[in-house]
Image (tube, rainbow, N blue to C red; front, side):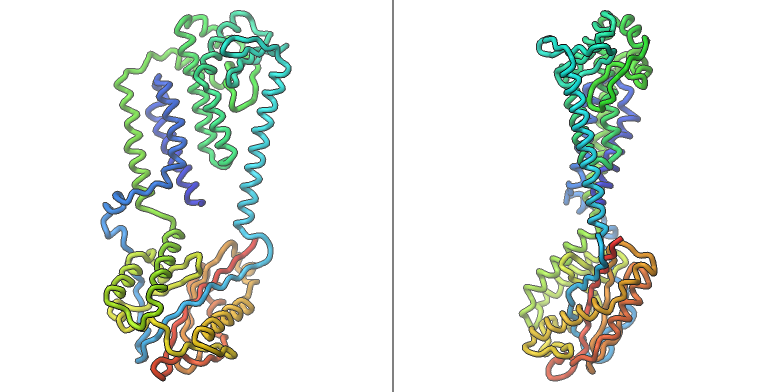
Length: 478
C-alpha cells in the first residue's frame, strides 16, 4: 500500500511538472482545466494498470533473476536429504503494532480533514442564512451586510453590500462565469480527495492550480467587453475574502498580479495545442514502469501461492514426471528476487532452493516413510509431522529473546529465515539463519540449536537427513 501511494504522488508530480513547464502559460483555459482534472485521477488509476505486452518486451536479462550460488552440496554426505517446511513462527511483543499505529494516524487525519470540511460548509451556510437573497435566474445573489466579500459557491454568488456599484457589476459578471462553468464542483472534488489523501501534497497543489485557472478563465471572458475598466477594478484596493478553499473568490492579493499578467497575454496559437500530446509519452512511461515492476511482497506472496498449489497437486505422488520437475525448476528459477535464497508469503511458506538443477531429479518429494519425531510425538506419520511442527514452533516462541528488540533498537516486522537439518542420529545440525540484522540471525541460530534430540526420519528402513525451513516473524511493537 505504501508503494502504491508513493507511485500516486510520483505520477501526479510528473503530471504537474508537464503542466508547469508547457501548459500553464497558455490561454487554453478549458483544455487546461480538463488536463488537471483528468491527470489527478490518472495518478490514482495508473498504478493498478499492468500491461502484459509491455512486460513481455523486456529483455530476459532484466527480468530473470539467477538463483543464489551455494557453496557445497547438501547431499554430499552420501544420503539424499529430504526437505520440509515448518509453519511460520510469529513472535510478537506487547502493545500496538506499527500497522495499527499507522492506521490510527491515518484515521485521525481523515477525521480532522472531514471535520474541517464540515466546518467550511457550515460557515457558508451561516453566511447564506445572514444574507439577503435575490433571484438572478438561474443563480442566487446573496448580499452580505457590512462587508466587501465576494465569492461564489455552486449557484450562489455572495456579494458584500459595501462594494461600489461599478465593482458589483464587474464582480457579478466574473462570478457568473464561475457559476455557469460549475467551478465549485472542481474544487469540491479535490476537497473530498483531501479527506482520503490528506497526506498527499499533490492534491493540494492540484486544487491550488485549478483555482488559479478558474480566475484566469473568468477574467478573460469578462475583460473581453471592457478590459480597461476591469484592470482598474483589479488594481483597486484588495478587499476582504473568505478563507475557504473550495469557493471562487474575486479578490485574492496573491493572485492579482498573475491575473493581470494573464489578461495582457494574447490568445495562444492553436499550434500550441499539440503540447497536450506530451501527455501520451508521460502516460506510456508510467505504464511501462507499473507493468515491469511490482512490489517485492506481491511477488513473494504470488510465488508462495503457486508453489503451494503445485505442492498440493504432487503431494500424493511418490515420483515426479519430468514435466513436473521442469515446471518446478522453472517456477523457482524465474521468480526468486535478486540476492535471495528463499521466499515468504502470507501463508507462512518458506522454500529454500538448496539443489542445483542436476540434483533435483534425485530429491524424493513425496512424504518420507517415517518423518522425524519430536520427543513425545507418536501416532501416524501425519500426526507425528503435525505434532513435531507444533512443538518446534512452541519451543522457538517460548525461548526466543524478545528483549533483543530493545537491545539493538529494532522496530516493525522482522522476518527471519531459518534452515536446519535433523540428521540420521536425530541431532539438530547445520543451523543457518538469514535476517535484516545479525543479532536476529544469531538469536535464531541459538534457539534452534537448543532443540532437543529427536527420532530421525527413515526412508526404506534407513535413517535419512531431513532439512527443515522455519520462517520466523518477529513483530516488534513500538
